Amino acid sequence: MLDLPTALRAELKDPVGPVYTDPVALLAEAGRPLVSVGDVVTEYLLRETTPHVALVDGMTKRTALDEEVDRSAFDREVHVENPAATLSSDLLEALVDALRSDESTVIVVDGEEDLAAVPAIAVAPEGSSVVYGQPDEGMVLVTVGPETRAAMRAFLARMEGDRAGAWRALGIDPDP
Image (cartoon, rainbow, N blue to C red; front, side, top):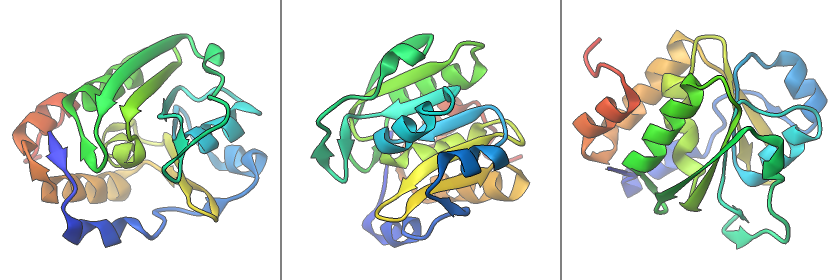
């Protein structure tokens, strides 16, 4: 549905929020619902709480993990396909559905979940938190608010592909 052009990749290098190494300290600042993106981040958070939504792919830094995330902590498990450097309609629709659900949901991605933080920030409720990994640094905590939401929607609008379809899948108006 959406592809990440090479020209935009550098913009994803810097963290969008503060970086934490301690999940307890992070959770003390986090809002709800809590969305985690990435296996290592999800595993750290599961030591203290179950995220409302978690997206995992069984990999870290493009290397398969020895052990999978404990998916039994979640009420629901959804499987989607999402190739590297893309956001598929399956992933976007599963994310929106999970955010609307009263049940905790783990979204197991066949492919790559790295970009999922962008649409999660774009559509998660005001005051919620999205946590993703910053390689070799820690966990980035993003509190969803008007500025972070607008920045992620603007980023999505610059990706290549079926933007109108992505907006529909996310349930957002591209021209608010």
